[in-house]
Image (cartoon, rainbow, N blue to C red; front, side, top):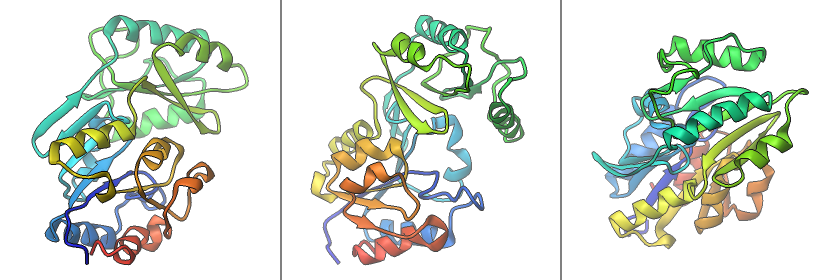
Length: 265
């Protein structure tokens, strides 16, 4: 095994965390624990904001977090970087979402924010109910301007004006098309790759010693950035040109399989 210290970055949903059985496989937990014992650093690198990583953070011990597509970066107990959408712009964004007939969730460090009214979109209503059960939803709604959020996630339907929505946000928000009418919206200049860069600088890690694990389109920036890219069995095809190792599905012990084959454990 190569003794040089590596930095491993794991996406959550569909990579480290199974969206089928809602758990982190035992094999992945054991592999990460062994990697850290071997002297490597392990980080979660997720589109989820800090308020949404709690359940996974309790399942697996890591060295830090890159949350909200690079909007908050934590190494150990130290916050290396954190940003929110300016309050005034946040108010404008809420109006833009509604004006163009979309709905969704505003994602913050302290919590998540939905409209207090029932959504006309069943998927959004279901998402809200599930997050309420998990204690992730703030009591504040979109009508209140007493909070900040880091990024947001919206859903469109046949009545939505997607073109107008894009045009209204093009100056300062990057919109990631997640498919099936879902759009992940992140402040321009922030990606999963920018989070990695901050961690590399903090720990003085060379790019050749960075390994990224992912499956979905918001992992594209870190796949384009890193030299060692592990692609899960079920994945977005856009990532394939950048993958250096193809592994199995998360439910089939894909994380542990890749880490063993790559000599990380």
